[in-house]
Image 1 (tube, helix red, strand yellow):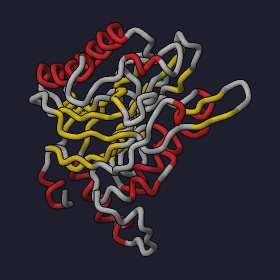
Image 2 (cartoon, rainbow, N blue to C red):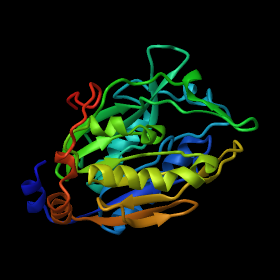
Image 3 (cartoon, rainbow, N blue to C red):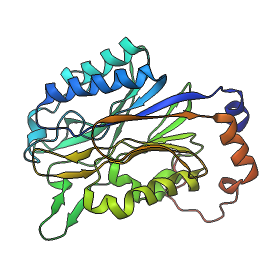
Image 4 (cartoon, helix red, strand yellow):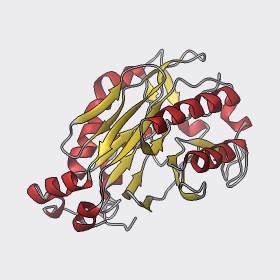
Length: 284
């Protein structure tokens, strides 16, 4: 969307949902619905769920048992039904979909419009790998990476899609081209999140002069994992508009396209880029 088009749009409310999901899919769906309703009560027209919102299993392989074929399954039906019921655009966090490798899943972000129709899918590209001795994660063992940069056209502007660990790779966001908002469902660990999460979220907002809606898992999980939380909405100047440190809840903020256009006019950094790379110059 162009700056002039942005200026024509009125301000609107968005929400990031924070959860501490467990291994029971039905319980997680019920909690997600409760929190979505809470966001809608506060006027949100675009709602973003966290990564792994339907399941944080006891083992990494648990998500294989609930993976779905694209376009069918109770999790996808839930997302479509809720978007339609509340007449919102819904970013469905991430859910496990079938992969080419039968021993793995795709970690997929689905976007539904206010009619309950799926309009975009993004498969997580960068897979988390951490080894701190007593704390280890190796997503590539159970997740098959995606390879496509995805931007979706919406009534709210062009929205770039990313998931959690993707946040650490700024070239992904440069490749998105002319985005107005970024959505970032996440499940950052408490260990890395303490020092890295806010810095990275705000950096992506500042360098892209875009709003960032970062929804997170936040708290202790029955599998023993602790996630960082601190779901937040950040404006193009890097200002945190709302934040939730821990536990289930929602953060809500106004997105002001006219303000964003004025920031981009005052600081036209996106037009000052002179260094290029093949990955950043792909069309999204």
